[in-house]
Length: 89
Image 1 (cartoon, rainbow, N blue to C red):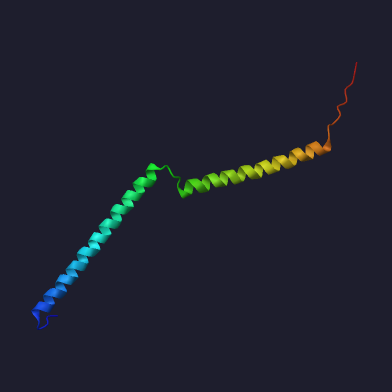
Image 2 (tube, one colour):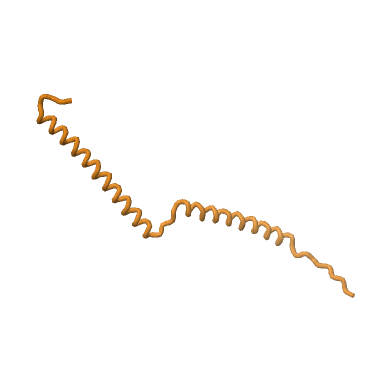
C-alpha cells in the first residue's frame, strides 16, 4: 500500500527494517549467552537432573533395604540365642 507521502513510507520501511535487525541481534545475543552458560555449567561438573534422580532412587532403595535388614536383625536379637543340642559318644 503506497501513500501519497513518500517520505513517511520510507521512514516506515526504515523502522520495519530496524526492528528486523534488532530482533536478529536479540536472537544472536540470546544464542551466544546460552552457549556461554552451557560451557560454564559444563566446566563446573554439575550433575544433570537425570543423574540426580538416579542417585536419589538408589539412595532411597538402600534406605529401604537398611530398614528391612534392621528389622530382621532386631527380630533375631529379640529371639535370643538358640541352643544347640550336641550328642556325645
